[in-house]
Length: 228
Image (cartoon, rainbow, N blue to C red):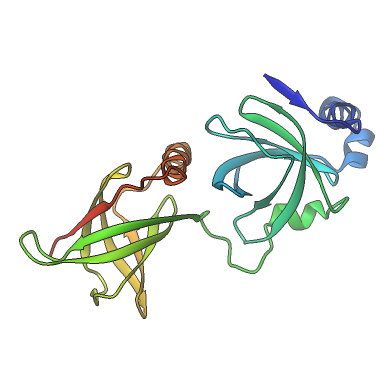
């Protein structure tokens, strides 16, 4: 079902869409670009959700989700470089949605460059979930905490010292069985690299399910098994 919002939003989005197929002068005036698989994440009070930007102008953008999600009237989007933009929802039609930039016209060149506080990298989704780490198949277990996950790895904290290069096998409810290794360590914070990466759409749907479960009163405890 298509949802629209007051203030001429539908008319504005129609004008933006017409710029794509209209005369070249109109396209230049709208400063509109088509984006193919430009990933970002939506920041809401209920979690972070992967999306793909499909087109953008100085006044707003259109994006695609990977799963059903009722969007709030106002939210933020973060791109691969860490730069964030405040958005006002103009319309939503299933997994497609259009937004206006809340702060007014933006520099589309800067947005397309994904300039921001971080080097361009895969989108990381914050996902706080407790983990139990078994150091051997028959050894003691220690508690850990998952902090974020991307297509290619994850970050967790653990009081137990884990060696760089250590191979891990994660078996977590909702995540399935994942093979990974320790790539870096900063104090009690560890970065893992998955041996097999996620597809963008698969990760989006997985995290959406886990965040819905995490918002329920009872949270599952995940089990991660460490293989020497």
